[in-house]
Image (cartoon, rainbow, N blue to C red):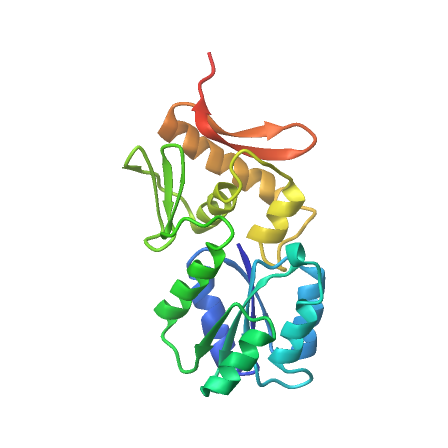
Length: 230
């Protein structure tokens, strides 16, 4: 999943970015409102952590402008602010925020709020994504197949998590690059193909079959059950 952290408190923003990257997210950062809106217009973010009080454009205005876009392209928005009055929280939610968090906050709670918002589309009611016998726990950062652990790198974990939100659907390399890698990724390298390849080999070893298939000319698809090849 690809996130954007927006806050003019540089140290705080960088600390949040660092923590989220450790959890396997692809994370970009902006330190003012206009830069944030520009990045949100050109990148497909799944969620934006958005401060309200910022130079050049405040968070509420950014949120209002994002909500003018088609619903299917609008990212989820978690507002982060020191303004703790009921009126301020209601105003932020009315502007289109999906959730509201008061500063100062503990990073584990921020992480839990993000997981909750990202689960809203493929709603499971838990921290786990399950496809057949494959289970991915976003809270514990653990993947198992038939209750046996599968060891993955952070990027492989993030890639599998995105596949598991759309099982059976063909996902292009371009879409994977937009949602699993940050803005520093080079689109002209083989990074997606190589990472899909290493993830696929690990899943093949764990399942005894093929869970991720290549759809020639289109992308990749996560199967509900491993396909055993003769």
